[in-house]
Length: 563
Image 1 (tube, rainbow, N blue to C red):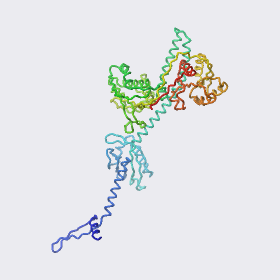
Image 2: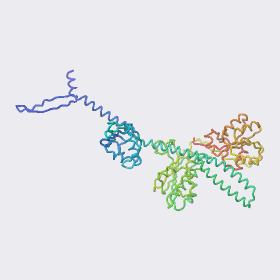
Image 3: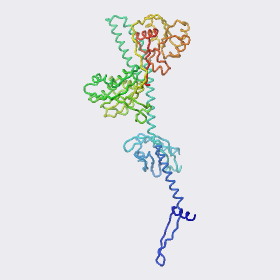
Image 4: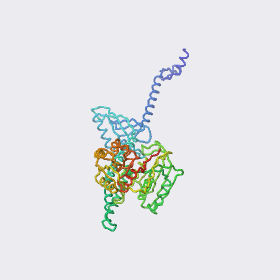
């Protein structure tokens, strides 16, 4: 035991001081004093391990520790948010170097926050931007506590932690942008809905007026101009509905390679000879489930936007590819659903865009063109079509370096439900059945009643769902068809149909609205297989739909989605 203890003692670290001195006989003697340093060595090791754990934790959390000493005006940062922003470490500096690394627009706010914390002896909490030596901007959140002599502010110091919140700030900005676009979309859709009511009456009554005039009558020419203007206005409302994702889409399986090839000749005429058009088609490109006509509109609008950015000529490239998107794809849209997509890229060598333009790019009526040279709806329409097709779009651009718009559409699954083709019929649209017409907009209601009565139908009309219930109760069993607006004050069209169908399960219905079937389905749980007419409608559209429903010949055309 004594030998083992001696061996263990020999291995223990010791601190020794050895003063040497000479004896009278000339020998050198070394009297020694040994002190056991085991505990001190162990404490030092534990302290180093603790410091390492703290360093790793701070780095993992993108945090750092900082201290501002007002007596010396020195600032010390450590951790991954050190003021040089270049690498983890410890940086010593002064207040001047600290504020030099602070974004110029945030310096005054940071200075006031520090002064307030010191004078009021309150904790510091502030978020500000810093600029690194390579020009990169980061968002930093600082929290600190004041210490020192309260009677002498010059002795105060603030010690705290800093957190890199750049990613959080980016996510917040994306959320605000998404909320803004959604709000603008709701506004645009509501405006388009109201205008569609007005345009329905304008177009309908103008057509009645035109039909009552001889072809060579000058008044007929005047009315025709009214009709043309109303039709142009209809086109604008459809673009607003496209942006708000409330337009009608007829989905089919689309090969983007074929679609791009099909519009190339038209695009060459559209962009002019001073711009070279290149097409890069991916082999074995998957198909997408979308409205082919609307996708053509996307290509055309993006090409026109590129053309306008290349007044002096340039190159326009259309490219397709199969791509897989996930959380690691580095895409700005954080809500992207992981999976396989078909990409359509429209790239130009034009003047490019600054940050302000990119922020407002897809907003309706935003344009950088001269007054009278653009509606500001082209890219808004593209945005709405892509979003309604469950896709994503974003732009990459820098001033003087051209622009690249990339559209990603979900690859169609193996089992998809396609829209049923429209059925043409040579049978007359006239009839003698009784129709209950419900429409809160008086002009539209009078127009629809006149159209149906001119076709021979007996029409009972109501201005609200409640009025319709009373009329139905007084004509129980004699009403063959309910034609109703979807969105009405009080009782909506779908709710009205559910009420009357309890007493007459065989009653048929036709819905009318300024919104698309898909939008109504989302808002009201509307069965998309139900007959549906979108405003503004023509007399022929109304009577043909009514006749096909009464004859059980109506084939629904649901807006389909990838399986």
